[in-house]
Length: 59
Image (tube, rainbow, N blue to C red; front, side):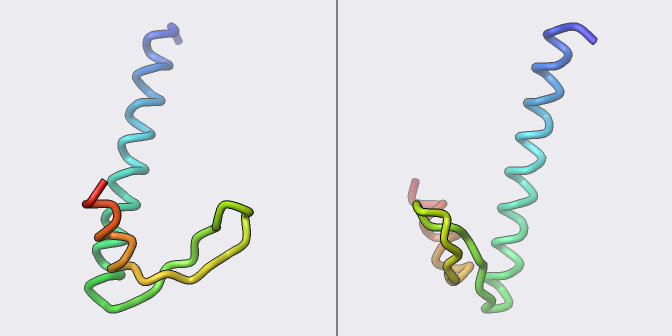
């Protein structure tokens, strides 16, 4: 596999992960559910999916 093919594959994987995460947030927000994420120190925190989705759209 050439270096360009490796770069292309990594880009496809990153794009797929991003789309999957966004779809997860959309589904959970529609259901009024929360998401567990890590804070800056690596500690788990529970946040509303709708809140995360709105922050993602703002940035």
